[in-house]
Image 1 (spheres, rainbow, N blue to C red):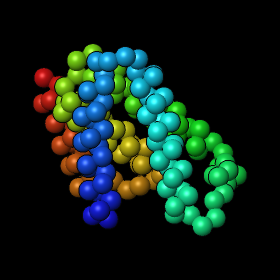
Image 2: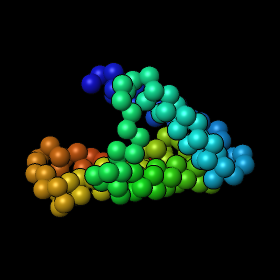
Image 3: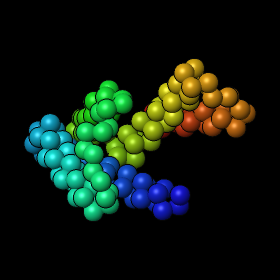
Length: 138
């Protein structure tokens, strides 16, 4: 798990840094198009190297709506960040605020939809996030 978290943290830092660099140049939609095309090529290469038996369309067989909704949410995230940076948003502040608000939203969804229990630790975490959000938005 340590390597997965490290990969995520390093990728996230690079992601925000590069989005901030590209936000001032050109069309955000064109940047997303090329980024996703290159990402698709990387994913295909990993599939070819890793999987013995590739069933490309098997993901659509049982839950056909998941990849489509995931694609829409990914484009929404990317476009939202690019537009936030394009409008002059600070890298640290935009990233922190979106993560904290996402935390609160996911906590609520976890409780209501997935029936995850509310614990003191989770409540304290949410309160800390809201307080941090208040401090950062001033």
